[in-house]
Picture 1 (spheres, rainbow, N blue to C red):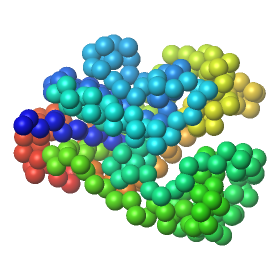
Picture 2 (picture 1 turned 60 degrees about the vertical axis):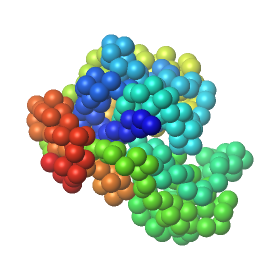
Picture 3 (picture 1 turned 180 degrees about the horizontal axis):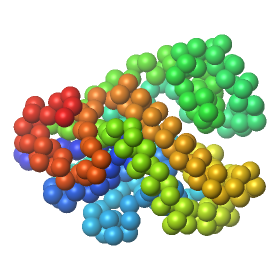
Picture 4 (picture 1 turned 90 degrees about the vertical axis):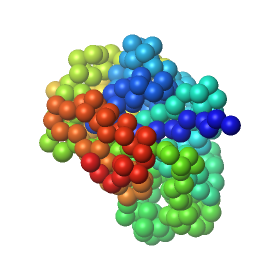
Length: 314
């Protein structure tokens, strides 16, 4: 019986070159890409989420991109269901699934399950959304110091979810996630993490942000506001869009907004790296300034044929 092709997983902070590597590997192995990105699932969030171009999508099939409108919600549970469907479809056709993205929670949910946390409660969620963030953080510090210590305190969505779970269950949010364990279901799976030196990554982030504004991020945001962007609390967390919405409301000038998006993106990339190193068993691939995915392909090919030859870092 022929075994289904084992997936290849590619993670890492924003702007490291994950998508380029995924496309190159998909071309070489007849693969298809499953996006592991919590914002690329939304139709219309194109420029600010650095979605693959139409040319890239014609070159290599992509999945879990543009799957919901701004009027709909999307979470890790939905991602897991749709990712498993895409995986099975790709493998049954003899293709190699390549999961690529920067949403660590989605990778972990796919590999470890969703834990014991209950689903969202609409009434309680509305109450928490109307509560000042500082009050929620105070409650979190009192009831679950471990989560308060490590959570992104500037992200209301995550703080709200943590407090919601605590109130619904009466147990610390951290305790309900502590039983998560990574368990790769495919013995020859490669789980790769792309990394760059901070200075190089910051230059790439700055260039990407400038390109996004040059391509029309402000105009795209104006269109999305008419489609309900401001009412979608998840989509409004996408880097760039919230800052542009604030600019359109008169909060700051356009040059100030551009610089703020650069700063927020650098901070986000640092948090991503910390999260990936702490929670996911990645083999890290380091790229230097000006280096692209081509330099990694030969070593990765060796790893595919001899999995033990790739471990730790290179």
